Length: 248
Image (tube, rainbow, N blue to C red; front, side, top):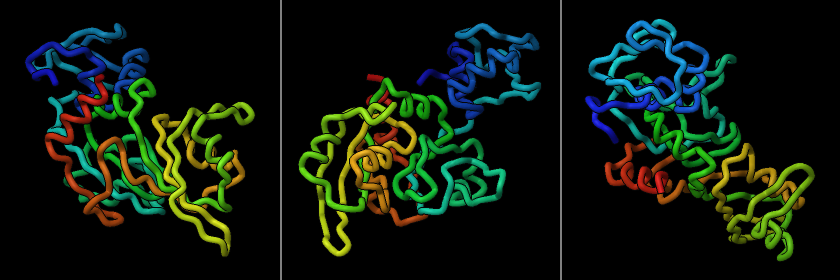
């Protein structure tokens, strides 16, 4: 990471300041919502000096970046993976004390009825790197499905396939356990894509809808030591390793 007295691209400064993800920051610049020293800037990639230049978004000054925070959360079912909800439903932010919430956002998302590992941070740059399709960060899920998939169905999931207008990329799939009454199976599915409800759609496409879904790991990070609704800060070496993986 660059030091604060070094020139930074404007969109990177905004994401590092926790204003928005890098893609959202680029959109703000294009919309003319960002000023540098009183002048509207629409130029993508413009470099600024954080300690010298005055940056404003929607006429509000952007301060030097908040201290970066990184947490692993074990999201329970019943919580939205959003910062706020217009209908007042519980969100993952409710699982954090107020003094830790400023600028925090979930990296990716888990459905309301899905539980498991969720990375929370105020580091827009890392959030961008981990969710961009180009970087292929692996996510591991345990999926309890209706019925017991055959060898050919499991192979279809492993090889990737087309279902209607949707293309599913190859995944690593293992059959962990089965039971007969009623017939159900527990699968371990490892994917690098981040399409919406991807695991559920994959399983439904081979006629084994998901009953219960849990994300157990993101890259090398897992749920060890966490209970539902609890979180822990990432260690420095874990943060460094995530950056190294994402920037390869």
